[in-house]
Image 1 (cartoon, rainbow, N blue to C red):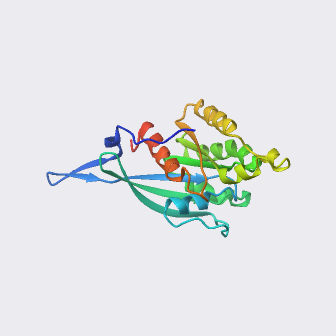
Image 2 (cartoon, rainbow, N blue to C red; image 1 turned 180 degrees about the vertical axis):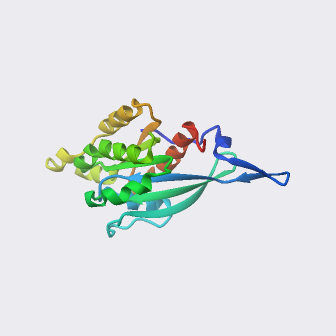
Image 3 (cartoon, helix red, strand yellow; image 1 turned 45 degrees about the vertical axis):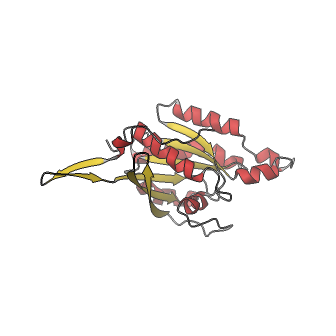
Length: 212
């Protein structure tokens, strides 16, 4: 599993403007997409990352939900992240298309205890790239690892479990298509690797050219 580290080239995350002879540093703004099937934990990941805490149940997202968070990279540079949490149900597909425009990166989420959500990831990536108009960086997230640990000895549930190796192999296939991509496993319930997943995407966006 990849561990996120602050990039050494954080100055590329800043837009510099000159106004009336004064050098002004402007906080970078990144639009990122949170996508994946319904009930894989996208909203839970967003809520935990935003510091709102984990809830065991939510109403389904209608179309898309939106949040903004500021983070400080190594060197004290500020970055603002626009997080667009897209509804995962098929009947929202036509509504979702407009939200991909202008996105600079995507978090593709599946549940490690729901194989069908894993098998749909490549469809999500294609939908994202098609509507965004380019191959934006992707961080593949295997969520609900806390449940996988509970189900590993259950002969029935074991059939639906997605292993770490399978997740990494899928991320490798996505990367082979000429895009900045990586893989991380998370638990929204325990908070494990949630912040690291978002930071990893920012790193990938910067590697891909940031705001250029």
